[in-house]
Image (cartoon, rainbow over all chains, first blue to last red; front, side):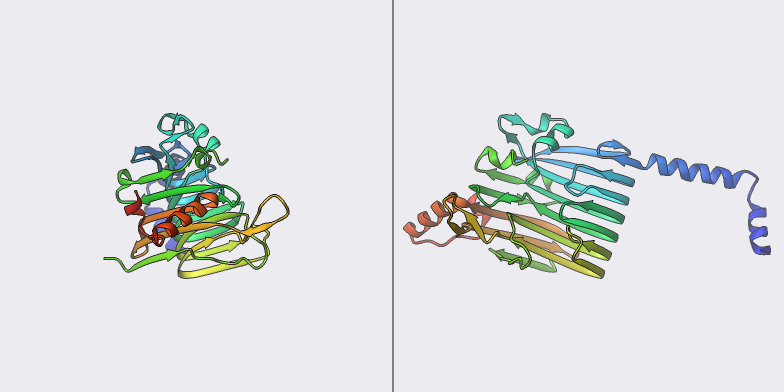
Length: 171
Length: 122
């Protein structure tokens, strides 16, 4: 009790309140939902593919994924779409339209921190580091042909070929 | 330096509890704590430490429309390179349905086997 009193006694008046305010401000500043908030998003055009990459720190809510997630820490995800889908160029689509109409051929995410995830197929809690990659889920009755090459350290070098528009209008 | 280099050709995991409706490929690495529940919340998994999984789920059968069912036709190759705990490269070539049957017949006619080299097929 004495130690606590001495420690707090050395802090200038109002600093605790200011510190709390800064912490709250930092927390708010570090909040993001999909592409909104403190988050960086970029589109990378590659050979037959468009990579949609999103990086966020702090608290991030992702509702684009099949399993919506809440991450506290570092969140880095890359979605790979065909460059052209049904005559539409994916580089020019708004994210809401893009994810509403098409499923990514590949989604690769990396988180460091705490993540809560819940949706079709999985409900999970992670504390630490997690890398997850999943490919598009293919209907067993359909004809499909895809060739894909992806290197996270060279996203512009991604190569994608698919046989028809079904592959990108699977939603 | 690559700590592991894994190549898979048509890995098949038969799902005992229910039959898969879709062809599905996934890779997952955890360092730390990870707790998962299945969709029906009947199965769970707890990882403490390090774990890496790579899985391909292939549906066992396809309804041919006239009451007949056949094994799903699929030719596939997945190539994964990891460095430490990080995925550094992924390549695949997947062919399903009639396209897989046509490719298999074409390869048979040429006396060739399915080459697990997506980069060469590009």
